[in-house]
Image (cartoon, rainbow, N blue to C red; front, top):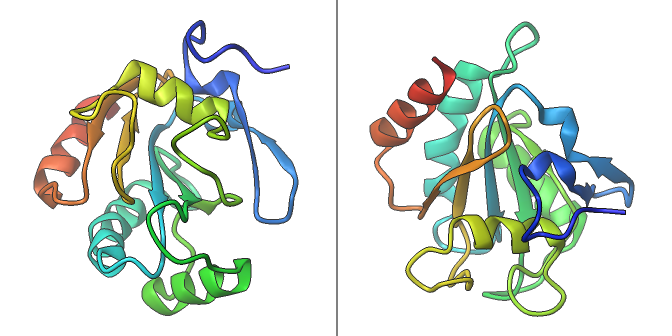
Length: 169
């Protein structure tokens, strides 16, 4: 049983379904800074956002260092539906190797939004309140799983890197 979104202290209290249909406890990311991103590979901003996140992921995440994790959630509320195979192929062709983890399709708004996204929107409402108005909304969490920023795809890479660096100190 997951914690009610409004009562949770961190996103580690939730779980998410991976692309293979397995339930994954998000407490596995404890101790790392996380970027939680809703996306569509068919969205025009896809390449730009991967261009922003890929170097950061590679800098802060390796076999010996797991300071940054990126959690990707496919969301088709803003565009065309894609299959899991299409998503994986698109990521592969864009990055050459996996960056972050890709979960199963979700809705970020409405009654079918998962508890995780309800929690993120309660903690960091943004300019549309508890509504996510586009793909590539990025929630930045600290090492304790608490959302500290809600960002859009237009954030400057150096600004995002500075935020991550601050949280890693």
